Length: 353
Ligand code: ADP
Ligand code: NA
Image (tube, rainbow, N blue to C red; front, side, top):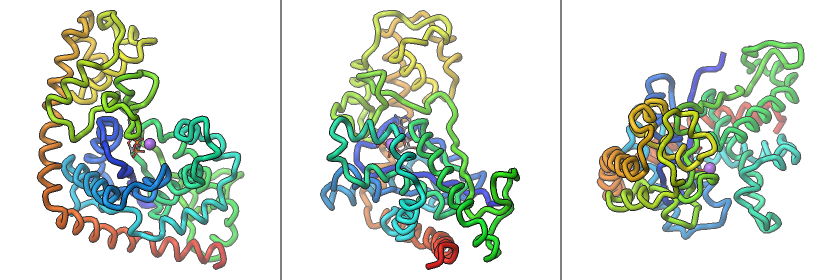
C-alpha cells in the first residue's frame, strides 16, 4: 500500500486570516503525530491572480512560514518549504495540464468566483491552478490532504487526474514494476497504481469560515474589505472591533442548533466560537442559546483575542529574524526535493521521456 503522507499548503498572498488558521493550519498540528507531513507555502499559486512585488512575495512567504511554526508545526519533524524552490511542482503541473481535460476544469467553481465576470482576462495560470495543486500533492505521492471545504472540488479533480494517469499508463507502470497494488480492486481500474488517490480531510465546525460582512462569501485574503476577516496579525483592538461590526440579523441566538439554518451570519459566528473553543456548535448553543448578539459578540471577541494573541506574538518574534526563517525553508526544500525527484524520475520513465 502507499505510505501514509500528508501534504497541504497556504498561499503567501498576505492577510493570513482566521479561515486559514481554523480551516487549515490549526488542523495540521495533530497530524504530525500520525504520519510524515509536508507543509508548503505555495508561492507559485500566489502569482495566478497577478504578480505581487518581489519584496511582498518574499515577506508574505516568511509570514506564512512563521504562522506555521507559531501554530505548532515543528520543522524538525515536518517538512516546511516554499513551492518555487522545488522545481518538480512546475514540471508535474505541466504533465497534468496534459492529463486533465478542459471540461473538468471548466466545472471548477473557485475559478468562476475568482475570475468574476471578466474571465477572458484571467490568467491561464488561474484556470490551470487545480492542476498545479494536484502536482503539489502527487509529487510526494501524498495520501492525506487536510484543507478547508472550499478546496473539496479541487481535491476531487486531483483524484481524477491520478486515476486517469494510472489508467492511461497501466501497462507501462506494470512493465516497469513500480506500481503499488490498487487498494480497492475493481474490474474497471488497473490492479497497480503509481499515484495514490489522496483523501481530503475536511471535518469539524469550521471547515468554511464566512466573511464577517457577508455570510454568503467565504472569508478570504483577497476580499477588499479588511472588516470582512480577522487577520492573524490583528491586535486585540482590531479583533474586537471586527467582531462587533460583524453583520448579523436582529434576532437573538436560537435555543437549538437547527435554528441556525437560514441564518448564515449567526451560524458563522457560532461556528467560529466553536472552533476557537474546541467545542461543537451544540455546546455553544447550550451556553448562549437565547442570548442577544450584544452578549455573544463580546464573548466571541474575548475568546478570539485569547486564542490569537499568543499566535500573533510568536509570529512577530519569528519574523524579527528572517534569516532563521529562510534557513528553515532551505532545509525544507532539500528534504522535499529528496522525495519529489525520484517520483518525477519514475513519471518521466512511465511517460517515455
Ligand atoms: P485564500 O482562499 O484565503 O486565498 P488559500 O487559498 O491560501 O487561502 O487557502 C489555504 C487554506 O486555507 C486551504 O486549505 C483553504 O481551504 C483554507 N481556507 C481558506 N479560506 C478559508 C475559509 N474561509 N474557511 C476555512 N478554510 C479556509
Ligand atoms: Na483558496
